[in-house]
Length: 504
Image 1: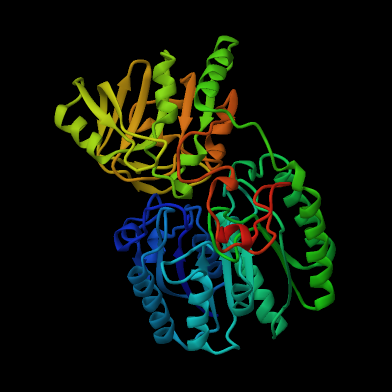
Image 2: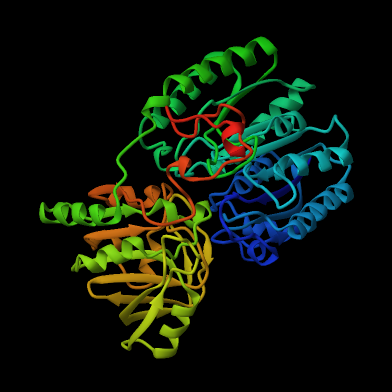
């Protein structure tokens, strides 16, 4: 087959003040930079844990010809800038127009993109692609587990498949599944029947890990239903920081007949409804988390890993809030490390001062959050780096990463990995490049919600989730909502959104 391939990924936190502009997609924010044409084969190489990499490898192994258009991603943030969305979408659509005729199209999308002018970025892109291809050309899409899936997306694509792990260790595997679904669609000779159900409740991302219940059991149930029915079944847990009508989890099934699709989707939806009360856990404030970590260290438990999910740059956080850092310093912790801390000015000052220098500077607190501010510290510059490293863990796979000028700053007993380019801490090499060995550090603070677990859980003595300032709230009631579906519960078992309340 001749298969057109393109990708356009962004996870949008509509409550974050930052924006995804041309520069954000040009850099990639921890993922490959914007890439065009044949260069995509190098960026999306088989060792990269990316959906398009898995799809391309599967298609080439089957002897198909890939027609590469454009692939890009940006670090999660606030809205995608209107002009940036239009520029990239236009290039993808024009590239598809020029590449036709083809046998199929594969699109590597996220599913939670919101542009300044488009509440469903993926649905709008698919509509523009369909305007070029017509209704009959098969289009298959892969989506993130955190996709806020719309009916428009399901209607415009022949098949849509989502990740099944969080941390997303199955991104490349999802691309390979997308290829298998495309082959089944073409062999069938016509469209699948599709049935979908939207969840009546939102779940905080810190309780969505598929390492734990209830998500682990839900995805095991999904695979059992799929095997029993023969349907292609997906469950996206949604990204609960998007004030849009399609926010929230979705279950959907593709099958040769409506009866099979209905049976699969209904069974999975029943499991999701039954699991509502189980999406919960302990949330510590920073001082409590540090005290608990020190107590565990005294018992011989280490590393104790403190997740800082509200400042997770993988969900729109600024990665520079100071709540947990202040708690570490106040407790005079003897040995801890925190990363990644995004502060280009501090990194530049450290490079100007040089290794071994002692300097006083205002660190972080630049997001303008009402509950955070810069933290004035005296720090020793322990190590400097140009920020170039190669990841090696199960989340990023093998990827060349550029964090820009970086520094390890020691504040008392706490070492802070300060970087110029924002990226989520989800690989051991993201500490090691600054001389910090995570496996032997008694306390680690990671600005991540769940993705860090893929690499860090195997070395962890204990994991704690701390609630410090940040743009990604773990309690959705803390946000001011306006556009959600009427009656959607803001937390498992929590209060429901009403338009009347939003208007007041």
